[in-house]
Image (cartoon, rainbow, N blue to C red; front, side, top):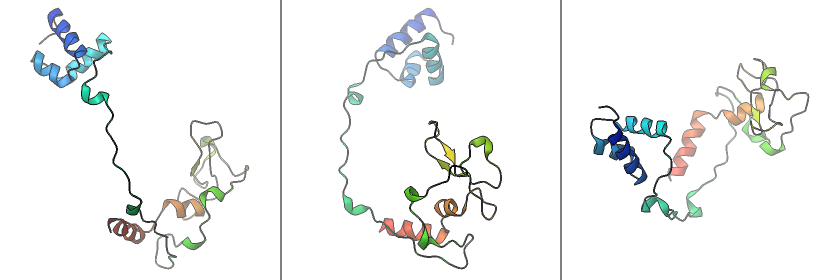
Length: 162
């Protein structure tokens, strides 16, 4: 079916009344929801009546502190892919990256750490730039942060299900 003047006027009325694109397609007949959406955008229709249910915000469920459980990572040595010492992991806020080590996106190569630092939209965004380990994209510290052995992930998941 084509968009006649009468169908366009009915579309505008139904849209202003707050009907969904699916409801309008059903009302008009012979067209899809996507055809309705496309026509609405081409016509530049925007102002819609708010439905009563979406005008009032839903109340949130109260959180209880008892559901969250912090699990400390044990020291893992020996038969792991990366074999890092998890006991000596510095806090992320405490790690200072020297200015001469920091790299922009254009300065990165296969041997520099690709860990992003800061907000990509800000002017002081950079990448760690440290030397990578074991053909990974990160330095030793950021590899410890990024990669967890599968046994640890399974153990932590089980403890949260509790």
